[in-house]
Image (tube, rainbow, N blue to C red; front, side, top):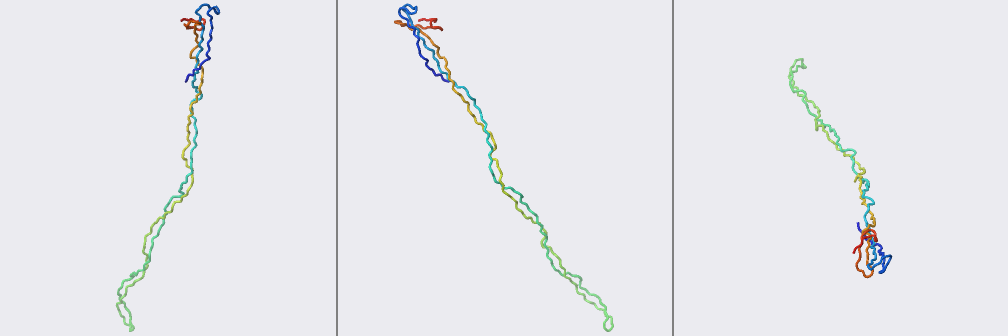
Length: 209
């Protein structure tokens, strides 16, 4: 707030009295009335036009495209049965032990003859299978089945940002009375003493030296 003093139109309403007689005023101690105009100042002050406020701005979410590897079928192991292996071997097997037996026969002359007869051992060939390696289970690894796909990834979610708009003011000026108008009496002629007056009306005022 500031006060700017402006000078009013300076004027002096002078009522001149002659040394002899003027408008019924006679005598030697005559005065003329001097009017001092009122003094005004311009009073400036700020008036709030719009208060401070906040404006909301919606910020959209940000997305970007990313590629990722997707497993369609995971890696797995499949069991494989391995049968036992065999080999065929031939071997001689004793069927009957060697021995002797008493044998009676008739010769050409009609005689009965008894003899011990040696009987050799009897053998046969037999084939049999021998297991070379036992049955087992092996596992075959089947790799995973994968593919690449593109998807949308959110980088930043949606949000709200606020903007502060400052208050707005304007300057309003008005004139205020700093000093009211005043009047005094100044001597006419050779008088040097002036009179100061108080009161609302100049001619109805109380004056004194």
